[in-house]
Length: 231
Image 1 (cartoon, rainbow, N blue to C red):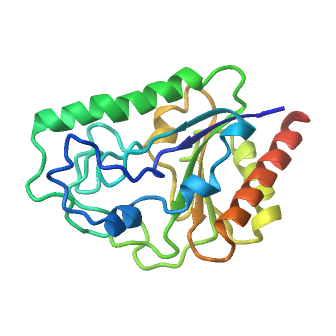
Image 2: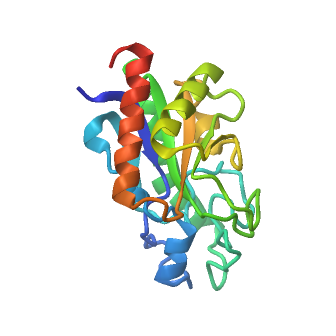
Image 3: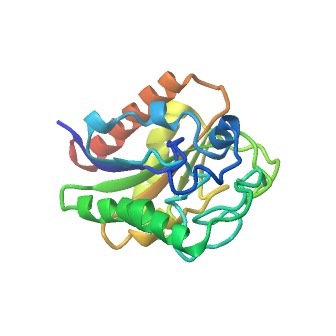
């Protein structure tokens, strides 16, 4: 039986969309560094859950975890990566930004809304994070925990957040933090009225292989779901 969970994996993509391919000056390595390296392998769990959404568009170009009106350098359509590297030689004009928002960002969020049915007990926005905070972030240069679980102070009931953290501690050890360094991004905040949402961040530090991290994530999800109702 599939787990009654919706997984969102918004930052695993590496593709530069055709609308800006000629303008983008990032190297492949810089695109990878700005995204959630390892996420495609760690969260390769589509066959295990009721609903699953991802995108092949690189976070460095369109960030699904930003609001449409977030026009900061590290906003929805970025001018700089989280490492403060320029994305373009000459920013895209407004009509190109609008096209990308319509084609990728709005489509992603429409899929999340459509899949938030009564079958979903919990939705999880899945990420990996640098082992130390990047220059554009809440914790520059600070060492991060192995796991960060976020609920933005209310995107799901606190007892769900705490039991979720406890399940992950069983498989990842004591380095599991709640709302530190991340309190939860746009996705969990924008969709919290559709079903309960949690943001999950795994450190890219090599304390496990990606395959081992995937196995531990799946085991933790099974344990948590079983505790919620015998799934």
